[in-house]
Length: 114
Length: 113
Image (tube, rainbow over all chains, first blue to last red; front, side, top):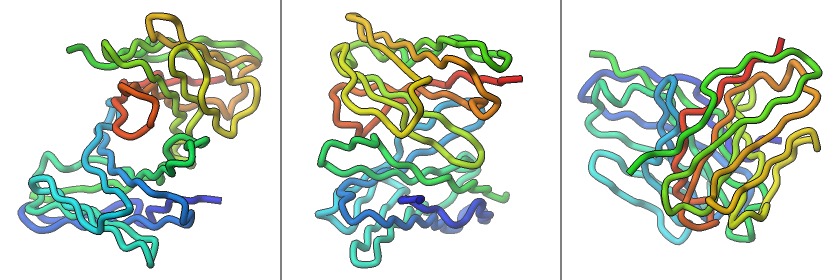
């Protein structure tokens, strides 16, 4: 049973436009959410996070929105740049000890078109 | 500051063999976690070590084990390898054992033939 779902395996966006990556979760116990970015042949790198007590967090071109009632979060990248082409993973954890560590989605491959 | 270092980078084994993967965390980081990445399943949590103690364990069979040394370096071992164990094994370190902002290594790509 997949608790964190990224339903779009890939997404193509034109350079300069907004990229919106979506993530849904089923476990209402999750209270902290993160986005990681992964280039080929490298490990994932932390991008941005949000606590369940907030509904928005911004860091430069990256903004994460959290809709707890819908159990949905999204990552907005504005404006999109060629270097943003990578696989993006959504991850979640709950503060009850996280026996499962971080729970990751399967990733969305973002392709920025020139 | 050096990042998380994983060795070896690539490994080819045959079914039934056992394998040991190594991870050196960022200096000062005391928590090390291991994840398995496969195309079909994404990243799945294996286990986490903090101060030489296993804190958490994911839903993997007992063939998967690990340990952490006093210098925070960690190893994971997979015994009696199966074809389905072929995956990218990622190690991540963090300052404390809260599993939030993890710093990942580049991984060990294991192929089981």
